[in-house]
Amino acid sequence: MSESLRDQLLKSGLAAKFKTDSRAQAPARPSPQKPQHSQKPNSQRPNSQRPAQGPSRPPQREPSEMDLAKAYALRDKTEREQREREQRAAEQRAREKKERRQKLAELLGGKALNDAAAEIPRHFPHANKIRRIYVTAEQLPRLNGGELAVVQLAGRYLLVTKEVGLAAQAVDPEVLVLLSDAQATDEDDVPSDLVW
Image 1 (cartoon, rainbow, N blue to C red):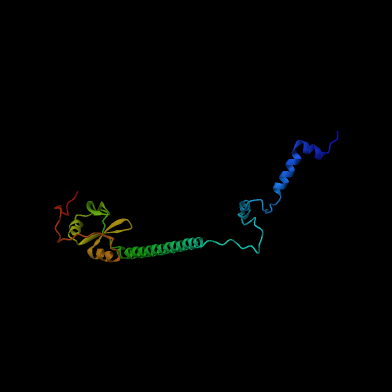
Image 2: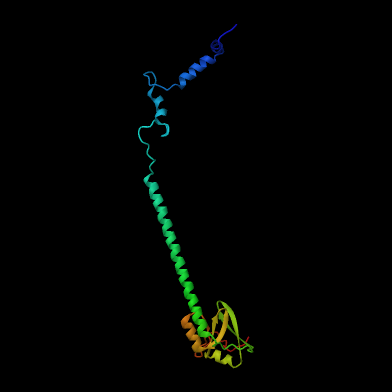
């Protein structure tokens, strides 16, 4: 009744299977009976499974990858330089604008002829809108005749003499918003002294 473990395994078929599996797992040796194409899968193993044949070298990058990396680096450098140039130009414009505002404030300081008691509105176009400034009865014909001008400073419209208006225009061309020409004819036949 007592059979050896090996005999029991042989009867059940496990021992035979174990023997065939152990042969399959053994390293394959080239034999004249086997065709050569059975060795190809072993020859195409990844680099990590190949036996070491010398000092391992880091994988080299393709030349196209290096060119692409250089192109990206060059593009980043160019974009950074462009942003820096734009920032310097914006800072320069801001400085110049601040200096112009200071010069205009000094030039127009105390020279505004606006009267708090003025009740006559004088309309004029500015920045694609119709604006108005209040003048007195004495100032209206002088404004329409070109003796007075309107300038804009810090969001306010100031009534000044023609000379001050032209001096302000020399500092900043956009500051002079109204200077009537007495010699010009009205193109639309609307008189400049019309009150509406």
